[in-house]
Length: 272
Image: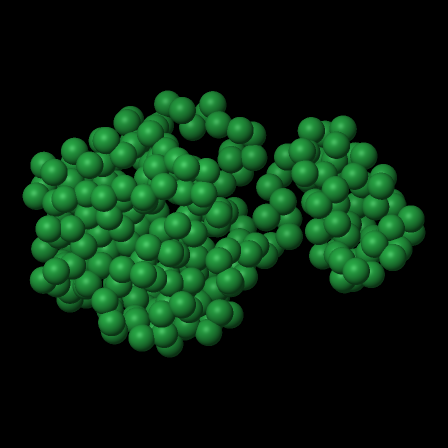
């Protein structure tokens, strides 16, 4: 198939960014650069792997999982169906962590997934150390690979544990900051999401009946693991600022909300 033929197939399947995605698929599976591709755009790129990838993408299987690697902040991450796909909106959480963490901070990243929040924060802050926690061993393995690939493996501890059962924290000591991009979609709304999200791990999306289960648990029970002056940073849903602020207030925290690049509420900072 030629570049234009792949573009047309993706377009007919309803893939909006079909030209950019066609280029990414050809470059990935035919091992050529973008510059080389556009010099050879009329060439027939024959590859079983490429053909299979195009078919998968036409079925709306996520591009990120097909490629197996995705960019986030300044780093590259291995992703598959065991991890939530890193998204640009989450970069705001990293930016705030990088700017707000004290010197030589120790932080914990709850519900780490691919590890992108912890790893990119550590990459930008070589003075810091962290622990990353997730429920599933397969997910934690990927986070570990991403930490090593991005040069922060020696500063990131990894732990398989259930964030909703915080007793595991007893053996970890205290932290300057608790950081988390937890599941925050309402259970009843998950089946209404766009088709591509069906391939992402449901456990990384489902925040309970009102989407707030993880915020309630972390805010109410993890504060005792913070050092004096420590705080929390969360990614939140675009419509959850008031609810998270109220949970914070009920537990003795002040709450500051930051917006993402689309001007939606996206990060909550909790502090005493």
